[in-house]
Amino acid sequence: MRQAGVLALTLAILLTGCGGREEVVPTSQAQGDTSPQESQQSYPCTLPETAIHKTLTVDGEPSLRVEAHSEGYWPSEFAQALTLEVYIGEAAEATQTLTGTTGMAGEKFQLYCSDVDFDGDLDLYVTYSQGVQNTFYTFYLWDAGTGCFVPDTYGLGDLANVKFNVEEQFVVASRRTDDSEEITYYRYKEGALVMSRRLAYDLSSNPKVMRVTEVTAGEEWEPLRIVTPEDFTDEDWDEFLAWMNLDYYGEG
Image (cartoon, rainbow, N blue to C red; front, side):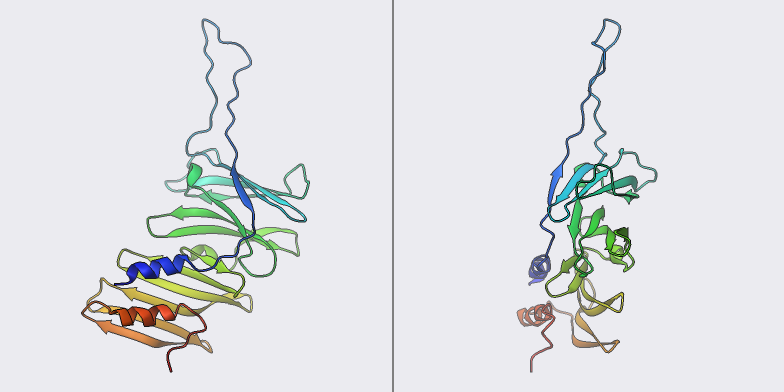
């Protein structure tokens, strides 16, 4: 059984980042202006545990610094308000302020920088939600024309566990359950994110199904489909995993 191998190889797909470093900015603990009196007491002022206060710094010309913060208040049952302040170069004041929401709290929130649309410019993305199997992000893409970050127009936020291979110019996403996984490869074509290949297996169905879907000239077809009431063999998994290489098109 090689289900674990599928997950391991999925996570091992090369990811080219921006080389930035992420640091946690400590919360302030300002004391009151007056000393404690017999009739009053002062306590440290700390942000709530759900609050976000993180900084991402990227070296370069110009440099980039992004400060993410929230007050830890939840305007809805799921998401809390989020503010991203962008500083470019030596700017003393924020060059741009982005507002949104995130379902993450405190240290579980992450802030990333990478060229996600392969145009040579660095983009921003943050964790929006994270479950046991699947993580989703919110993306902000750099627009060279306006010189600022703009909301994602490709639908990247709808993809689970998305990763970016800048060198080979493809995007890969995977949606998982305990018994199934769907791995989809995309490329950018004519300003849109277009599916190139999908690998999927389902161990909970009866019979079990393993398939590869290829897109050629806009048409979908299945070069591999295995249906069996038994467990998949090692040979089945070997053939399935071979299709994770986008230059592989089957034996013979």
